[in-house]
Length: 344
Image (tube, rainbow, N blue to C red; front, side):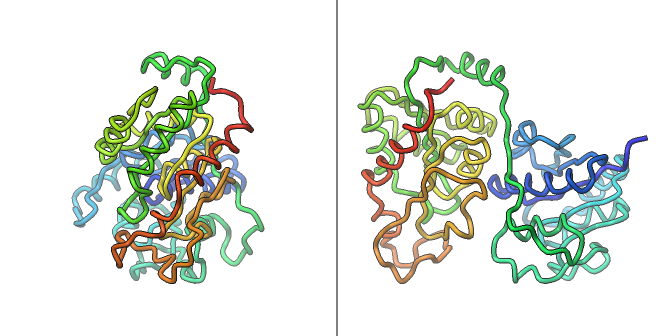
């Protein structure tokens, strides 16, 4: 008879969701006979298809700004039917623990967060002593009091060659021996975005060198992508859209990715695609992928306001991003591209 499954309740932002695969891998090591399911929104659910060690996703789109008790109760009934014996609840919010508690999951592990006494019955303390998100999430997968390892298991995303070929054929992107660079110009908050004009300049230079340039992102990046495509000539493609799977497959096919500090940087790194990460107001130590990336790009200017971790520049100058030159990023791309073969 199979062991009772484990439910993972992660953060639902793309980068944090990718980080949760470290927790999946830890749980697979500790409980190899227990299936691992992951609560997910419809937006990030495609990531689960490429995460080894996950049995399935439980898809639900709960409101972010209100409790919606009825929807939590309906979710609890779905969870109860699965017979989960344990739940790991990464977010510190009260409502993130509500459905697992209503479902009667026997062991519910999480940080105390918003005074979640009763909702979380395996309470952990010391969250604020762990400055990195990955440390906070992964610690919950360890027995209480056990020291963290020197290196966490790295997140992994695996895409089959068969699916990649079918995707390229469907979108009219047949491999022709040229290197492919994927640009991810979006980010949560304008301060984390390298200027669109810089991305456009970079795309023009790459296309002029014979590189295939794909601009990726969600619906919020469609206008940015249109500006980049309009600004140049050559093979610059707009692949933005509402389906995250499109960006995942584009990053899997690319030789190199260039991204702001955003979720797609984590996707590229977990896929093993050489990635150039551009960091302005945020600290790479705190927020860069756990996986190695080809290059971390930061301004050489001495700015006392950096890192501020603010979504909007408080001073209006945005120098932490504007002082990063196209030449600097282009050099990093060339160095990364030389180490990998042409896209399959």
